[in-house]
Amino acid sequence: MQQQRPRSGAYSRRRPTAPRHQRPARKRPTSTIHPSKFINKAITPEADVPYVPTHTFHDFGLNQRIVKNLDFLKFTTPSEIQDRCIPLTLSGTDTIGLANTGTGKTAAFLLPIIDKLLANRELVSVLILAPTRELAQQIDEEFRRFSSGMKLYSALAVGGQNIGRQIHQIQRGPHVVIGTPGRIKDLIARRVLRLSTVTTFVLDEADRMCDMGFEKDIRTIEAELSKQRQTLCYSATMTKNVQAIMEEFMITPETVSVVKQATNDHIEQDVVHFESKEHKVELLLDLLARDEVEKVVVFGETKYGVQRLSDAITKNGIPSEAIHGNKSQSQRERALKKFKDSNVSVLVATDVAARGLDIPNVTHVINYDVPQAYDDYVHRIGRTGRAGKSGTALTFVQKRPY
Image (cartoon, rainbow, N blue to C red):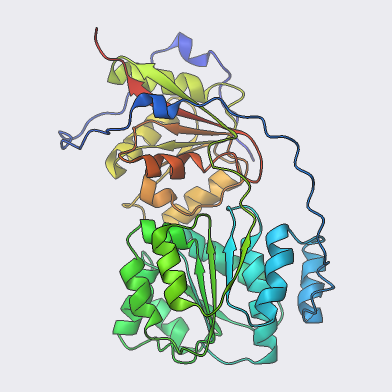
């Protein structure tokens, strides 16, 4: 059951409890981003002409068991990325899909993969790489939904979970391995995972993986694969690093782009000026109590700061959860589930913990601590305003003394 939050004005009657400082904070580099970069009036997009697909899910020639599952899951009309990529992938073509999160790209590569597996149940024939544990887990969940009742098995290989259990899963012989580059590389080094049988290689959110420093790991993993394979690459942006990987890994790929607009065009962006640490907490609590702030991600710089801030928010009557590097995988999963299910309305996170998360209907992003780089800022505010919806991003900036 969704917990009730105090209504606006509830904090004017009592002084908020600021998070206690348990140890002197280490001196961190000061952000060099000018505050003017955090201000942008949202452009109200012209009403998009709805995309009219050229196929239904019944038209692709997918195995009827897949179509039956899609009917049960109420998947009626393919999105643009699905409509254009599924036929290419089914034909065996190396495919580049440029699409934002929330456009249906996961189904665009999973459905043809499942179709291929039903025709040839070779073990460890599919490898899917994702930048974060959470995204890898989301892909695994989608695979299980789409392939329900088909006796197709996947193994999830990510950091932060018991590696012994993951080794056991792989030794049992899955058809699909889904994981993060670091853990996949580790399993290869342990000689647990052999990739010579992989016929389909998927890079999901390739730009994020490069941003997070996984490019070298990806190249190490790719070197273990057979050259006789199909490669699928999905990315929100075509950076130089992503382009280099695509040129190296893929053979005459077809590119499908459904990226509509820059991330920040439809997001209202502004700054919130604070005078002191106490004032900063007070302003945050006031913002979180407003009725229009329905579902909010608050970003902090450090894992200790994020936890203290989440505790302070909860202590002041607003249920909150935190995700950061000190949380176990199961703790992070529970926190995310509460947030997704709207049992809590506030999620406090570090940059790394929130990378790659697909959380629908986030109305606000609050940068409680200013990010160090503008790219981090763009990634943060991309948690809101998804799938064509509007959103609001607020960044806390300290007032300079005159």
